Image (tube, rainbow, N blue to C red; front, top):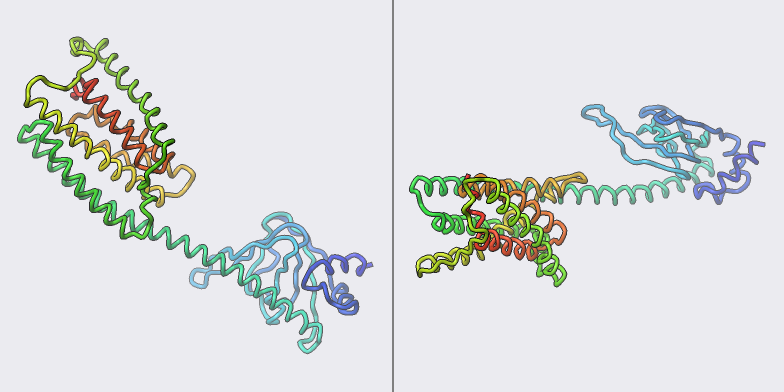
Length: 383
């Protein structure tokens, strides 16, 4: 009766498949069925036993105590058709790990009271050794993958640390430069002339860090994009254009101090000096936009996306990287800094979507020209 119940099950397992009828009958006579509830231990580390266990249905996790603090750590998990407890069988000693059911589990326990010189023992030992070698190979692959992942994470942390150090330096230089400008009561054009070199130096140092990091430049948005990216970026200008127009309309109609503003403030100027100043400003803006996008989208946002974990890491990277982006506009006005933050989030979303700096630069440049040089939002963003 026992033979008919368990022999067919053992025959399906590679460990016992080729045993002759006599050897299999000996094993079957020592088989019993075990049922474990979720969380129940099958084995405890240090137990003395030589039983083998075959998982029929369910799964168990293997745990090993940390020698330094005694805390149990999960080594691996095993499922249906796999063997548990093979080490104690080979070494005829104490259990070297614990086994606990991850869910309701049914197992076959095989009591192997066999002498070491018995041919059956030698045969099973050889097969179990082969089984262990195969399992060890798979576990080594998992360990290597985990080590590689940890090395990549450490590398990302190191790169981000360097970027943060440089970012602190940028903030220091920028705050001091803008403070000097405010003390000297210098005009905005001079402020822009000062800020562009500071950001340019910062961008160069960041680029050198990225080059030496070993990561491909494509990870930081250095791609040519595509026709689709360009078209999409142009289309995505429309809602930002609309926000600028609606904002100015609301200001002109509901704030008495701005009733006399012209709806469009095309900063062309009629004299040579103002035209020259406008040309300089636009030229600087052409340089300013890609530098800003590289620093805050390509370098900082990309690095944060590598460093952070969790399903919301991209959103977190966008929100955090736009804080310094907003800050560098504070010397112009607080209102502008707040507006720029919201626009920066929009460009951060574009970058995360397109994975190239091309689209962000196109959108940023066109929106800036529209907002500052055509609509003239600086006329009312004075606070």
